[in-house]
Image (cartoon, rainbow, N blue to C red; front, side, top):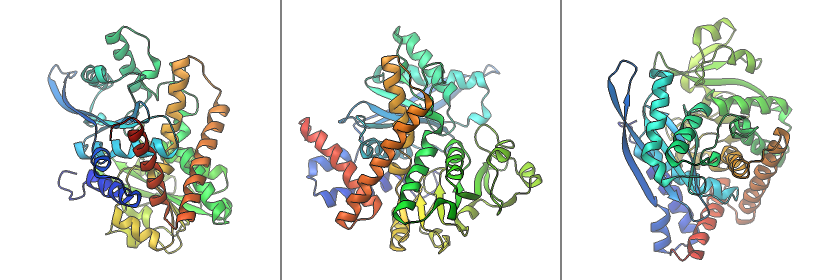
Length: 428
């Protein structure tokens, strides 16, 4: 990633600048919102199982908290950079605003590969991260959550370290925790389900039945798996997914034209969403190059992995059959590629709307943890559906009323809400 000329933070700033221009924001507001309020960079020394010490680079970046406490995930990734964390923090601000949650946006990261760390080493890394940031976080200040290659167990270790240091019980200080330890039912499904709720609404606008559609998805982690689950429940068929091969350090696509069997494919998948290539072949899946998911003759494309995946170089590979691109990942499409997609009249559901189900349910978990009362799964998923559907309709209506694409409409709504909060507080 360091040698890649693409800079996610510059892309995020370009997107913001475009929205700011449409809103005619004043210079001070633009200066405030195109950068982060606070950045925390630190080192985490961790004693490994062999007795040696490895020092990891960590971040917590708080973009904006004018609308409420900071909310944002924490990812472990060997190619993490400060600019990717900055971009994700900014996108989280717009994500909480577009679904009208009383939250701000932030992001955390550690440059590491958990594949290469034992469980006890991961625990020490989690506790070390908390020791560096506990003074600037808490249930009413900054609430982290799982992201790429972090999970409920990581959050529980972090919560425990936070409670040990502060001497208080504060289950709302982290979300994405295990159910039974302050976690919310429905949280693991939320991001993937949220993507498909927006797809369902887009199909209704296009007057297309889900049963008449076929999809291809990049990724096979939690977001992709639950997107597949709900999409097949409403009648759709997924024929291709992609997955990162940790051994070969490259991605592959796995295709079955008759439709993938989710449970079958999960049975040959590791905890990080890595599909075992040989076992998938034995189950009858074609193994294709990693970017083949993008080229499939399908109605719906769902990038649900990482940023910078649909670019000016490969956007031309998208089939003429594609009607919807739903961005399940953060920042998967570069600004120039996004313009081409919209120019082709493909219905593009932008990332911070399509993937907002996760932070929405994180907010639900935060509320439940803070009041120490927990809802049943059906209630959580019903609330999620209502929130995602109303956000989608608001963005779609605004887009049609103002002659905008979905991304521009979502940005204008989000940036305007945050800017108004900054003005009301007297910051600018």
